[in-house]
Length: 419
Image (cartoon, rainbow, N blue to C red):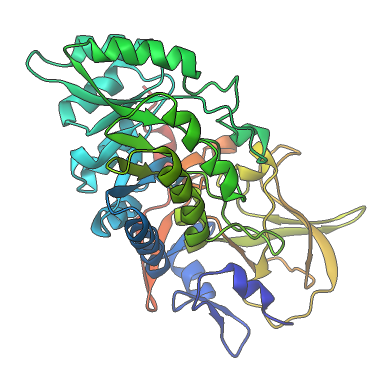
């Protein structure tokens, strides 16, 4: 078998002479023995390299700019800590992500808080911690901040607008179109900006827009810049994130350089040269650095060939949410020739618990390891306990050594909140 699937894994992934996948210097079978399956395994060097690429490419094009990682894509404290160590700020969407970011050692001034329905408790956490920017989505955010910010202090904010950009991504991850639940149309944003500029407790710093997620064409992302400029000149413009990540052989998202070339060209055309720019990569920052290892538990060759693994929608909701396609390989049989079409399904009691359909693989056997690349984004963060499923560990691997940064849930953990 050719090892063409290696192009979907981080650079340096290889196959040993016995046909076993080696990821970040670690054999897949050794990882499975030590940490069990399912397990999300992160190539730490690849993760750091991607953070540096974003940081350096942006600085080369617009020096007064910063990258903030959209933590919701992978809100593990260890991942956030890597970003902090590489000079990246953090975008947080909720109280838990704020607290995790603080545990990771971030300077609160480098945090940007999002959310269309922020609670009073979450905003209090933000104010008390001294977050650098709160992105207000509506008047209610401002109402709460004016009540929470102590006398003599102010909270810096950005106003999120709806740029009116129809993107080509799946409807479930579009955010920039008229009618989105996020942000305000330009006329409504103007009214809120005027209110903020008169507030003694809230300071207007700039505006924010986001078009959506998993967007392959950078022109769609750059299209949000001009609508921001219509609201006036501000010290800060947050251009959001949304660059697509590669999952399959057929997908070819723009490179970071291509994305930033388009974005910064639009910024130079429409925005003040002195302004600070912020970008918020999430999926494209972390997805390619990780794989998920599963064990095949059953093989059923009947009307269809069903290959079932010991995970599924409990650790990867991307397929059920917006039909994301993945690829996979038998991690200890990389040299075997594909010989049958199969449907990879999970262990959960839902017909929609399908990971990959169809896929051509060597004839799968019970006990085989299945490696699915490109699972760094939105897997850990949306893992759940459906059917009493224990959420999997997150493992960092580098140079042949591996360590768990989040352990597998125990049976006791499932009942820890019962009273």
